[in-house]
Amino acid sequence: MSHHILVADDDPHIREIICFALEKAGMKTVAVSDGAAALQAIERRAPDLVVLDIGMPEMDGLEVCRRLRHTSDVPVLFLSARDEEIDRVLGLEMGGDDYVTKPFSPRELVARVNVILRRARPAPEQADDRQFSHGRLALVPASHTASFDGKPLVLTSIEFSILKGFLARPAHVLGRETVMANAYAANIHVAGRTVDSHIRNIRAKLAAAGCTDAIETVHGVGFRLGKCGT
Image 1 (cartoon, rainbow, N blue to C red):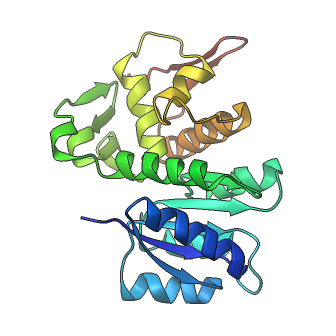
Image 2: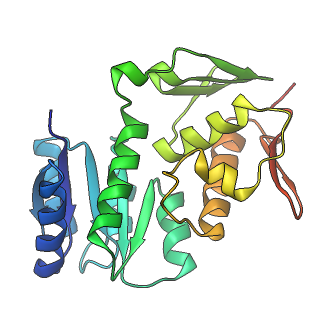
């Protein structure tokens, strides 16, 4: 079954490039030019993923994602015309799964979309029937659910994969490259600041659930799983 992708960007040329690349990869696309139209399209039919431009006029991509997260956990790939950390951090903290900076390689964008889709909905033959627990933190890959002390955690697919990587090796210190290898394809480069943004977001979500010692920083080395309320 083809994946259904919503593309929201106010530049018609960019929309055309993205849709052509995704459709060439076997996906179906719907394109809109502004944030309000994006929310309306999602309400009419929930897509498998949204490619969302941050810099749209009237209602920008960050606001679209903020509103979307009230009702949906659909994966979001942000596009940004500026390679600025604030855009990346805000996008990830609002629930985005990944970002691509303009100008971008259509091939890389398709690769990142495929990574997110695989993380969000693994194929049946790839389903992981293991269950992970550490302290009061629990994670079930098959149902893509996570909880702390019985309280559900709402994680993006990338955050879920990162946390799973820590739970699979709870006694190990993981370097940034290892952390992101748990979430991205090996041929996709991800900046270290993006790693930090994801870790910060996971910590914040766990702290909101009552876990203040989820992931520890080992300075100069990487990160390791904390006690998680043990």
